[in-house]
Image 1: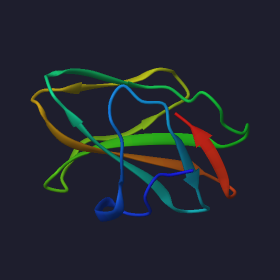
Image 2: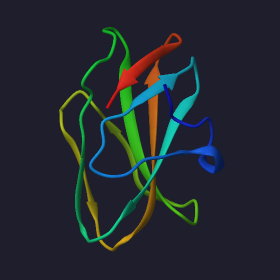
Image 3: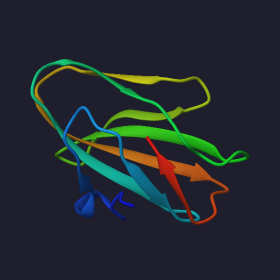
Image 4: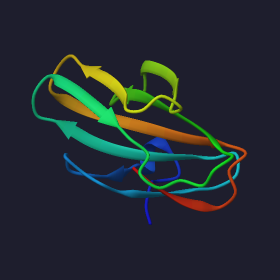
Length: 103
């Protein structure tokens, strides 16, 4: 299980990827990746417990939010990546209990 516990400790992944993030109550899981070209990033929950409201947001490497929270109730959640760069994806589960979530 992965997903770092903060922006600075974000788990590095290579795209395309399927990964499991360990969500803790009132904490986010963080995933860092490099986009080698402009395009779109689609995020899909493949395995997640019911009754938890999941949201994601996208950050740039300067720790600025590029796209604020998007609910994952409508899937996939898609982000436009305007330039090749390093990005960080933050995943939050409202009312989450310690649980793995596969993205």
